[in-house]
Image (cartoon, helix red, strand yellow):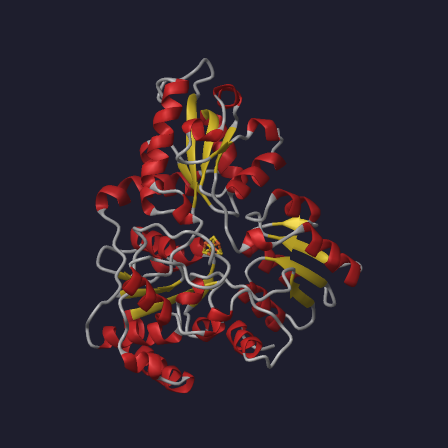
Length: 430
Ligand code: SF4
């Protein structure tokens, strides 16, 4: 099977019957960095989050030297390998599951965002950690790695549209309104519970993790969301969950929280666009955020997969909308999906609802199974796709020249409370 990038190039040239969600995907990511710089409007670039509005504060990538844009695939390959060999243990390269094949092949570790943050921690001798993922992941790696280690994001415009849907100002404004309803947020009831525990998904800025650390809250991943919600309900009457409404809803619903007690909070609307009565009765207040990759999956795609492949095992990520999770056989994190495929008897057919780079790689790695993406259109995560081998070559060769470019630094006044929220997550027991 060809890589997602190769499939896109063939599709755009009309050399294959596969379709993509945007012909611009065939261009180099620097073209979007350039238009963002010229127009002053940051964008996530082509792909699943193309239609999402990027906040004006989104970091913008400077133009990389022309030589990296002009270099052939083979030349970039040789330069990356040579730089990596020269740097040796001075550098560790981390690749997220959703990263394109042309980049993942250089990674020392491949995994989800939390696995990679821990991998960063396990290499204290490395001076530089090159994170081939998105911005919030590099922030987490910076907070968990040593103070002398530089965390580098090869393209600063590789953000996460979901993480950007909850900014610190909007969350603080929400908290202030909730305080008006519930009163003193530190006062406990007869059961020793405070009015609200804030819970942020790992896919959020360091500032939001810091907010949770300061307000008795916690971080969760898609693997431990249930454990974390149980932790929160032991300490609070209700939860404010951001930024992903779907992970919050799917997890709380599976724990028996009624949907009518899960109002949605839309930032910039009075009372979040809901009512005082609803908020009084709420158990989980869901932030109006979503992942544009996982929002593409539908019940119709599942029906089609079942019609074409009787007996197919449908596994979707819990960032998918609730009807999709309900219609699937199973839902779980990327780690869950990988392990389910590893453990299945040979000859199993899987329809997977998560990012296409991971699904195609799994299909390649497990030829004993039939594995395909539920979405028939090739539509990768826009921002992950911005990490092109040209940027990787640029940051590595800069390191060889003893220059650190694109360093991600979380200020200590944010990192200290954010680590508190992360440590609470690590200590939370199922
Ligand atoms: S797949 Fe979704 S949640 Fe993950 S980085 Fe891309 S936009 Fe963000």
